[in-house]
Length: 357
Image 1: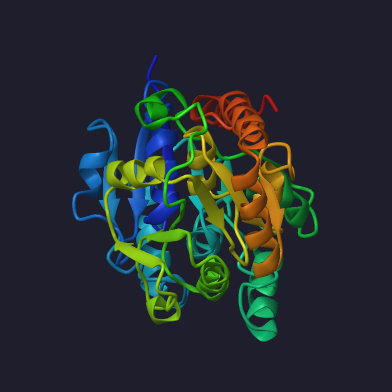
Image 2: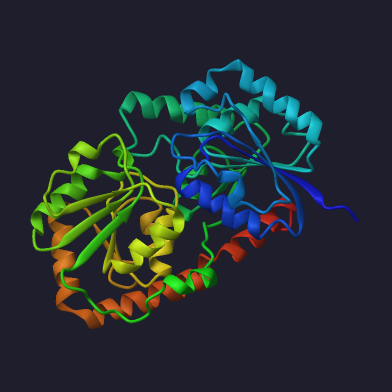
């Protein structure tokens, strides 16, 4: 019996979404004939196709070029429809806002089971000006009328999706817990000096100004930012090292050497970097937003903070109490293994594709 044809379409093929795809499709390839239509971003690795199973068909859409250019280029609507007609998929899964909008209007969603995962709605608080958020909300609201089921990547994102449509569910993001074992430290042993790291593009979403202020409040601690970006000039504290862009293995190695992981973002879907850091045995300090608080329970498996002063005090408290850190690390690793595992994620998607849940 031939495998069902699964078509993934994603415009933002970089960062956490890229590695989410790598882990997801690794667990889907035995059950599906997979094609990925993807868009190249500045941070997309040059060897991106080599990261995936060779059985996966990968097609780069040249005019997928950031959210605005993607949505307002009519050629993209024709292109995705052309490939849809050629591939004749049994299932279509759309990812992130630009591909979600273009494809929900370009494709016959009512004829083929179609699903859409936002990976962080663009209208969430903190994600831009009120006018910009209102525009994105209107885009998502009208597109939700199309016959495509929203599969949110966290419970918080699901609750936002319910405000748009009842045709939605959620599957929490997952990471390959077992394959991260070489980078895992199960016992908390603080280094000298203490190292705090974060991972991602230095952009508004990741709130580099807050990261910088936290570093200023803790001058005796070394802070590292794994990544780069346009807001690099905001990171002025002398105890911050910017590592630039590295591959995933190098990023995991740098995270492993750190004592703590911090994610002061303004908005998220369900961040892969957070799940990976939990799986690696890091105490995680996160902002109080959707995505972060869907995973972290304050003082149980990490810390939730709001202001720079709260972050700084929580880090000081953790340094003074290694036994409490160990309890949070143990709980966090257990949570990732049991709830945020990539294989479980892929299994839940299959059940939704097949109408079982």
